[in-house]
Image (cartoon, rainbow, N blue to C red; front, side, top):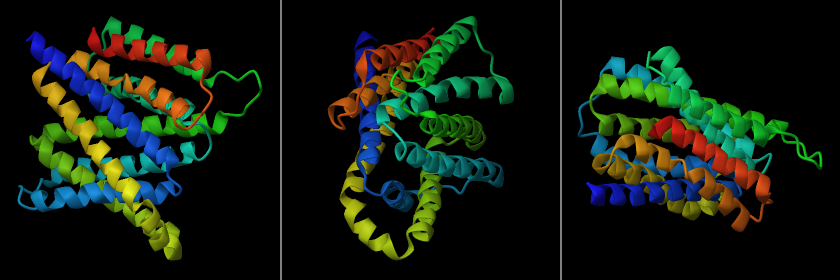
Length: 282
């Protein structure tokens, strides 16, 4: 059991790091819309040959898939908008940290899941950290727009988390459901890129194809490592450990993108992770 817990913890830390790297690659992209479209399309094309030989989901399941496709499309567009307006080490913690808190509230309101006192305490701690990120900077640097887009992106993450939880329960087959989710994600944002980029599309595709292929690998890695961790170790501590991606992402933004971080954001990132750990591990 102890060996499984150690292996699960290492896998989940790898998942958190992979997620922060794929977010970093998105921030570095010259055309983030085409980059995200290619990443999702590559994943869809990789999965589709296997998916066509699986049972077709029922209409009850497709309702959740279509709702989830709308939510993930909105998330991608809001993520791009946030990254075009400000630093990753501000947007990423808010996007990543708000989503679990919002998902907990949504699950309570719409799925009837109970919320414990520990979860309420963790929610209060995480909310305090998020309020700290939103607090005005001493130099007056504007950040209202990036925070609004980041919070809206987190709302979409919470939305498709709750939608997918209900969809997987209706489906009874998590792999098939997830496969169609990835395919629809590639279809929606891919179509958006085709429409918006028009005549410039192919030059952007040539420019972003290689980094998008790399991002696809990190996208698959974060998903597979998380599933592996959940399969061999208790779910609650593993889910809490995944939130270390907030710190990884902030540090990568500082080290690679040379974004200013400072003691204040380090303390807020640690406080945010602590709140999420309390929510999920106790």
